[in-house]
Image (tube, rainbow, N blue to C red; front, side, top):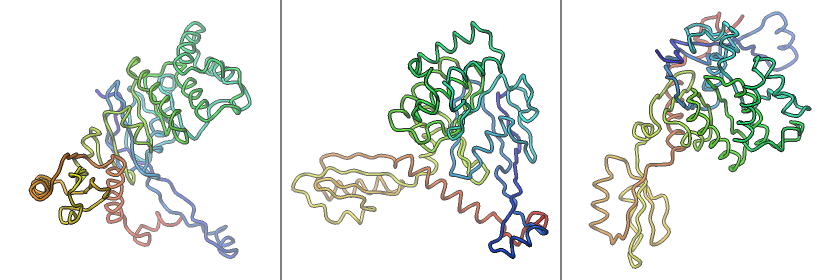
Length: 345
């Protein structure tokens, strides 16, 4: 039995559509028009204990909505979910004590107080025994190297320092499941790396289950073996990170190091020329044609070295999002084709 189970999970929002102009605003007092936003559309997903799963998708894909459903923050329109045997939106205390949610754009710490005061409050909320609280806090503070910052008001901390404190607050009660929504958003490269290293070490040591949403592919590559791609509320891919390239990348990047005296002319007939810096040439070649084109290049040009690489992960993910957008546009009915109950209240 999976630790997290989703079955046909769906969430729709009814959004008021305000018209421009004074007359339209007055008319809206008596006759309001609404639009249905289907944020999550029948998701089926299983996550096993101890997995570190990346939840990827463009803005508005349904990632954060799904995490809110799993956290019990909002109720679904239809479908079912079980997390550690609990239905999240029942908001049972037994469930609340076993998970944590960290949102990179939301604060759970008191802004004008030192972080250690918020930690004490969390101790009381989760009824953590004093010895367990002290032991866990000391461990997290040491791992994140923030002892000198505990007495400093949260508002005076940098963004990266605040995120470290947010993670400590979320992990004080030793949850079995951790939901992370953009934990490194806005952080510089050094801060991102430190957060990544901490999460990797902590997850491996405690074997907790983590669902991570992020727009930074370096987060995903550093932390997650499994990737779930969601777009327009539907799962488009569920598998390994390397499998994304195999499934959705249609080409390879070929870098040729030519002999010093070799000409760099005429390479456009082998594929798309991305860069020419004599004696180096970089080409984009469709996967099925790579072997044949390399044979032709070697037969016609003096080549000293060859590198065959997959395209950058960011590029592959962007292509996948674009394909999902096109598919969703084809499936989505125009607004005037929706039932009246979905178009107006």
